[in-house]
Image (tube, rainbow, N blue to C red):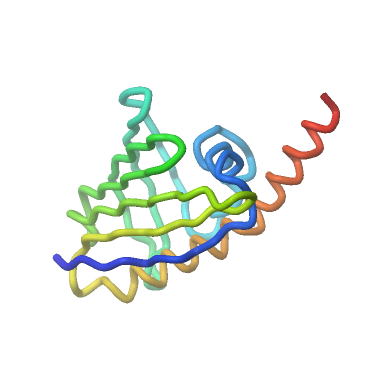
Length: 147
């Protein structure tokens, strides 16, 4: 296992919008990953932790994933993987408010042989999230202007 960081991503929406997008059940985040995630099953364990299984596209192939996510709004998500080629991987996503923007830093412990693939997966997830997050933010603005 090796440790690495992926720091400095910026999203052009405030931190509360990022968290509403990720944590709240909505159609926007689900649609963001339609080409890289399938067969998601999720169970809440507590008010901050859930566990799930799914299949994810990594390295050009589908692999099964069993995981747990702990989310402490508004600043951190911890993802642990238990089965498959990524077993033992742990990722911490740290969210930092930057006015009307949000910074994201990712800290990872992962199998050494998969580091490049994990970097690519993180980049792909970011690219998938940005348009869906933008659409979600616009919808939130429309809903708030109606109130």
